[in-house]
Amino acid sequence: MQWLKRGRANDSLTGQGAIMGSKTKKVLDYSCANKLCRICESGRSKGKDPAYHDCRQNHKGSSKSMEPEVGVSLFNDAPNYEVKYSVFIGDDDSSTTAKIHEEVGYNVEKWSDSSHATRTLVSHLHKIKSEKNSLPGESVFSQKVIDYFQKCFSYCLTQNKGDQEKMRKSLIAIVPHAFGEHKTCEENRLSWCKWLQNPDTYSHKDLSNGKDLTGEHLKKNLTITLLLTNLLKMLPRSQSNESLHSTVGSKVPKIRFYGGSESADQRIAAAVAQTNLGKQYLVDTLYRADIEPGQITEQKTAMIDYERDAGQKRKSSVEFKKQQCLRSFVDFLEDSKGSCDKIVLIGHNSASFDTHILLRTIQEYSPELLHTMKELNIHFADSLILFRNLIKEKHAGLKQDDGSFVKIKSRSALQTPVRN
Picture 1 (cartoon, one colour):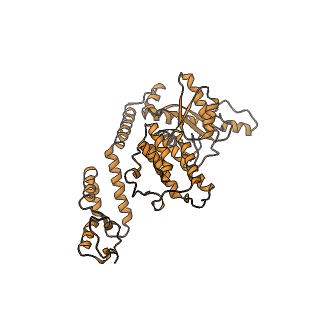
Picture 2: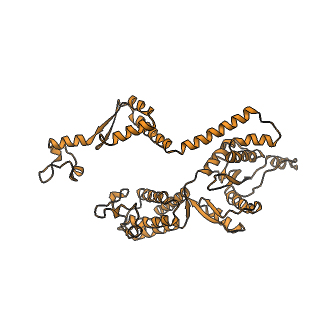
Picture 3: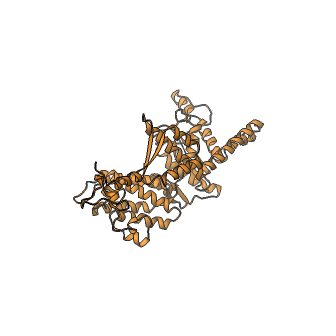
């Protein structure tokens, strides 16, 4: 549901809802909800009957109730076109889901997309944090722990998309894994569990001090939360709704109010047509109205649609994504430079690996960035070369407790702090 007002829009007078195909990304049906008609309002204020007009006022409840009512209307209208929507993919708004299950005359299964499922999980985790005080011997449920579970949850969805059973097994293992219990990881041979590779030295990368969480009560709460999320059927993240909302916003800007007349509905209809057909809808509409669009109009709309399709194809390519990453990296360096006259990128053994990989990738995908890096006066340094010289010279800071000096390939070389 999209409310056509800035902010949370709990008092929005206008909204629109649409049903989109999960694979086609096309709008199958849509509906508008309007709480106000200016002509009717004007007539009532003058104590007169309003003049004959195309009244679009069709909603009398709260703005929040627009979403479930529009959803039920769209699902109930589907059989009129000899179709039924067997699966509803959306956010986890319980009021909308409950109303669809109660009032739609056929069975509808509720699924969640991964973005909404992640938001729901994080919301439940914050609720646990706000309601609970740590018991003696129990780990503190900090923001860092919430971030850890959000990260694990997102990885499970991404790595197992398309395989509901594998996703279910991975989600079940998240909480025991965080508490140092890896039986589920072993039984399901989960590749993301690094404890299976090295049980003796494993420590958590994203938990405080790398230690397991503790506390049976905390574990029980987290298990229930993950199990509830695990009951959802999830699809990969989808941006089709956001794309439609963006198109609607370009035609019905929220800084202006169009809901008092038929203007808002007509503008939303134009946004739906553009989503499904591209700018070609303009030419088709003119022909349907027996208006000759003209050669320039047809050429312009065809050019815009071609550029849009070509842009979408380009942006979905691996090459474009790498270019974006490299551009972001160089922009980060430029922002970080400040008043310094140069930037030094330091890496361990980077002279024989990282530096070559980086420069070769830039040369292949974004060669123009090499000139930018020269202007930023970027240099590279290898800490391994420095470390080797310190060991060779037997620097006092590398002397161990037994009087010997660390060796370049020993574990102690990575753990011994260098003292001045």
